[in-house]
Amino acid sequence: MGSVVALVLVVVVVIVLAKLVRIVPQGYEWTVETFGRYTRTLTPGLHFLIPVYQTVGRKMNMMEQVLEVPSQDVITKDNAVVRVDGVVFYQVLDASKAAYEVANLQQASLALVMTNIRTVLGSMDLDESLSKRDAINAQLLRVVDEATHPWGVKVNRIEIKDIAPPRDLVDSMARQMKAEREKRANILEAEGFRQAAILKADGEKQSAILAAEGKREAAFRAAEARERSAEAEAKATTLVSQAIASGNVNALNYFVANNYVDALKVIAQSPNQKMLLLPIEATGVLGSLAGIAELAKESLGQQQAGAGTALPRVPPPR
Image (cartoon, rainbow, N blue to C red; front, side, top):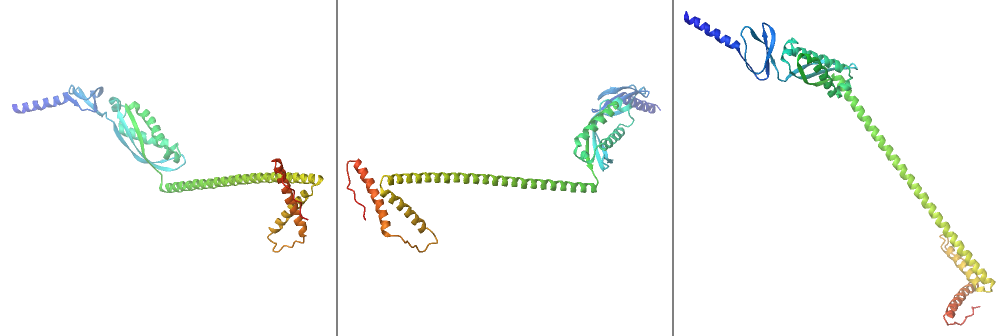
């Protein structure tokens, strides 16, 4: 009988010590309740409680936790149905609020996130929801973090993992993107042809301008040459007239013979002439040539007279 009592006492002592001594692991905080009322929070380490009078209420995980958001169908602003899922990273900062301000912290956080995902995506059209993922995450984080603050929870990040439109909508978007790329390609090709035509026209314009300038310069040069030739011809005619007026017939013979020889040269160079008939008296031609020779001798004699040497004058042949 005494051994049984001793055994009972040992069991009671063990139970009392278990209720008295509490060890809170790292990363957790426990709440303490006195007759069911919250009194304080136990931090990681060794603690002592009064059995029966004080009990452990909730054991809260203070480490950052991950909450998976299941996929759900969301209707966008332009009435497109997309399937969305995500993930939430949150951390409990106040164990007492997380334990007593909300009945089920994870379920409440999950419902809040899913509701705000529908709200945010419902205010955007499909293109915005697919292209502005960062804006969606930032807006969800701001709204959910503000809503969970009274629960003693800090929402660190909310990430939308996937936004999946229906298959037919994906095919339609693919065709639209293909048409848009073909449109841009056609625009670029047309722009290239237009630029090439502009450059070609500009080149032809510059070529025509340069050709016109070349023709104008050539005409100016030709007119200048004709003007100088006319001046030389006029001067030669004046000199011949002066020589005739002074009684020098040889100058007239030289002038006539020179024009005569030039006319013969032009006739000889004609491609249509195979035979040339000259009904001209030989004495006239010889006389003209003799006049040319006489002029040459007179000129040479004047030069030698100036140098101190006089040459005898040879009479022209008759």
